[in-house]
Image 1: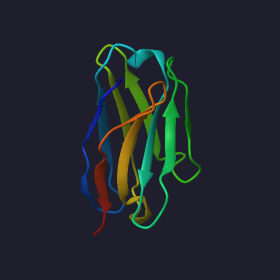
Image 2 (image 1 turned 135 degrees about the horizontal axis):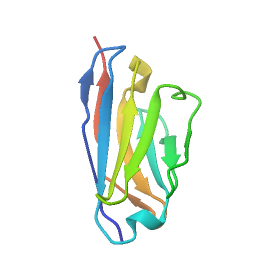
Image 3 (image 1 turned 45 degrees about the horizontal axis):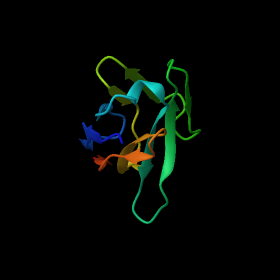
Image 4 (image 1 turned 180 degrees about the vertical axis):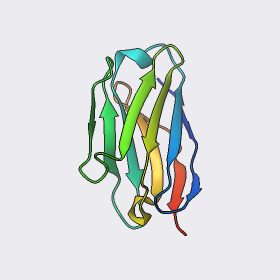
Length: 113
């Protein structure tokens, strides 16, 4: 089992940027892909993007060109960098470990002036 802990959320103005971090406990972190998801009020949880073990990534169309996911296997960390944030990016953001189907507790991102 892998335990995940997100951090880095907060209130950001439209057009701003932020970086979310996710730390994973457990020895098999580096063996599996990781994902970032988000859930806005009244909406279903949706994929933001994912990163496989060797670093290849894919992104949802809604964030493509504005989101970058990276991982540091030595530190058991995965990051989500977002730029040019929009109000519709407001959501709770979760990291996900595909191998163990583990989720973090989420971190709130609010984009508002």
